[in-house]
Image 1 (cartoon, helix red, strand yellow):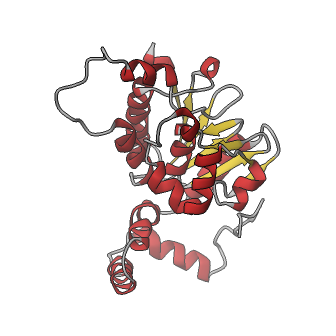
Image 2 (spheres, rainbow, N blue to C red):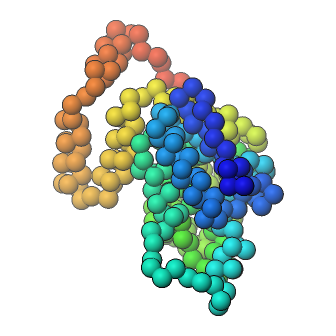
Image 3 (cartoon, helix red, strand yellow):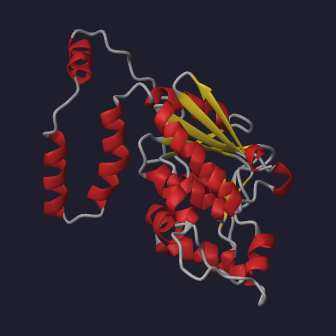
Length: 265
């Protein structure tokens, strides 16, 4: 059964990963997270960029609350030892793994679904997308890294508002708060996400790795340490492809950049 919970397809050098539980609004449990992790690792080995989307009418309504309720029951048999949080480890592999990921968002992108989206590097929302963090109304707290990733994207004030009041943000409001960098017409998120992923895959693997792994760490450093980290990375040995690309640009042979649906300011 778990095999069908996540779909995987390789298009050229792009991995397309889909959450496939539409009858439950793509609600996620530990089984789905485990299969997602396996496919994200596979994508890092086979592809140069990845896309994550949801089958059906929603990206993901977040945590499977029925499973959570069973774990909170008094007679639930808890493990004797604490283990690494599977959501944290899986989302970290997405956020700081070997390839960049683009999320194609539509419909409900709430709770754990928003935490998953926040782990990706570029988020494309169609006009049906709505964002929410309903944990406060459910008597629980975010548990998929949202207190770190979402808060760093939108800031404390917006995240506190969403959690305390249950406020939902539309696609355009999400764009304003950086939860999405692109908004497209209904039904077009996956198409645009694939287009962006193909564009990203044209970069050198080293550059993509530095953008997804080094850049966020520099953001966490002091001014002086950040500049030193930048110096170390800009001084790294570059692959022969880098010189070839520079020559193509200088000789007017480089592929021109095309801006479509520009990102939020």
